[in-house]
Structure formats: structure tokens, C-alpha cells
Image 1 (cartoon, rainbow, N blue to C red):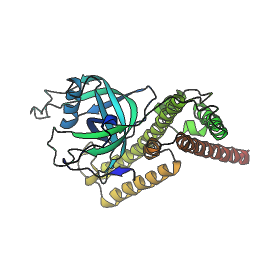
Image 2: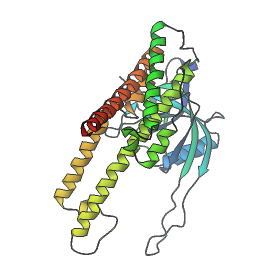
Image 3: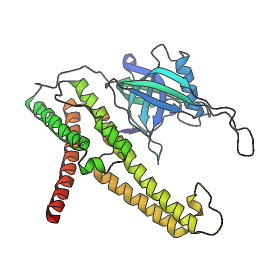
Image 4: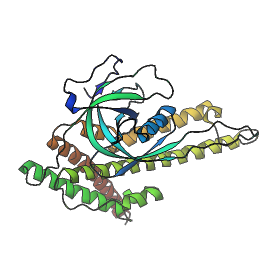
Length: 335
């Protein structure tokens, strides 16, 4: 079971105290993978997250400034039982005060703290001390067990490992070359911002050790997030166009932004069906940036993690090649 039920405040940590850390817990609807060396940015506006950042900066949680992020399900609020240990690097206060409404009323201060952090390890979450009835500025605290990490060589470890890692490199290079090729359908179907992002995918010639592996996992997740954002942007553009067109056809002055609840019911239903269809199509892509990476995070064996990443990259290569082949066949028929 990859999930835990939030425990009561009476819960006690694991018997192995030496391997247990007591840290702030930050539930998110995203997954962060460790050991890539990349910095991550978290924007905090909720009072409890702003308070957590303040406590970490003040040294309340020790000079290492560690906290744990874990995946939270949007529908049930259940938490994943495996998370990522983060180390706070820097904070920036971007609070907004003095803003006014159109009539001139002063709005309350919006507390906004931007945190720069680095993912430093994988943890098993043993329990959550204070999961229920939290005050607005009270954050969760968890007892977590840090998994050991050594930068073991993958190259030459076993014949199967060598075979899989070599295939990963080959498949990744093919995917990368397809996306950075300005003439490819995969590149041209993306918005301009996404094309720029995929053109910056790093080259990869070898996968020698665990650090190389985790850096590639991070790169692949960046690609998945880019594709998702591109699809969302394209869908929102179409929805906005339909919404404005329908609103302009209605009697009376045009109110912007157009609120969906003010559109005719048949149009609302049309937009919902479009969103559902787009979501189903996106799932079919196999480029989901959350659950696959949570699965990798939860795996205990290096070989299992390598197999999983290999399958993800191979699937995308097959999809891109099938699409390009179909287009070439279509163009040949036109000739």
C-alpha cells in the first residue's frame, strides 16, 4: 500500500529511533524526485505553509532546514506513504499589501513566500502527528525514515542492467531528436513556449550510475510537465474562444472575463465534454508527470526503477515514431 491514513496525535515513531527524522510535512499535488542536484521553487500563500517557511528560516527545525513533501490526492486528501526530503536553500518574501478594489477599498495583505529548495532524499512516512483539526497557520509534522543512498555504478552491474540502460539512452536520444527537429509534427504541434523548452532537453550519451539515473528522471519529468502545460494551454485557448464568441452573441454588454456559469447550459455541457475528452486523450499519451514518478519514488530496487523509466521512454518513442510514420504515409499519398 503506497498510502497512509493520517494518524492521531497519540501516534509514536518507529522503534528504530536512529533512522527517524521529525520534520514538517508539506502535502502537494506534485511529485519531486531527489538526487538530481536541481533547485525547486515552491510558492506559499496558505498561512500554514508561510508559517512553515518562517519556522525553517528561524532555525526551529535545526540548522539543516529539512522538511518533507509528499503527494496528496485531490479527491480524497490521502497522503502518499513515500515522500521526498527537501532542504531549504533560500526564501523570498513577495507579500502584496496596499492593493485596492475598483471602488477603492483596501484589500487584506496577501502573504506570499517563495521558497527555493533541493530534493535530497527519499523517505518512508511512518506517521503524521497532527493530521486533524489544524488551525489555519498550523502545519503537519511527520516522523519519517530516510532511505539510504549510495551512488552505485549501474554500468557493468549486470547484463540486464547494461542492456536496459543502453536502450534507455537510445530511446531518449530518439525522442529528443524528434522534439528538437523543427520539421517534426511533435515539435510543431506544441505552442512556442513548449517548443523552446523541449529544444533545451540535455544530451545523453551514457547512464553510468545512480546520479545519472536520477538526473534523467528529473529531465523526463520536466518534459512530461512541459507537454501537460502545452496541452492545457491549447485547451484553454479553445475554451476561451468559444466562451467569448457565445457571450458576444448574447444580448446586453459583454462582461469580461466571461464566467462559465453565465453561459447557456448546452455550452457549459459542451465545454465540460471537451475537458473530459482532452483529459482522456492526455492520459493516452502516457506522459503523466505525477503518478508514474510517485511509483518510481516508491520502488526499493534500483533495477525496478530502471525498468520503469525504460518503459516510459520507450512508450513515448513508439508514439512519436508512429505519428511521424503516419504523416509521411499521408504526404506520400498526396504526391
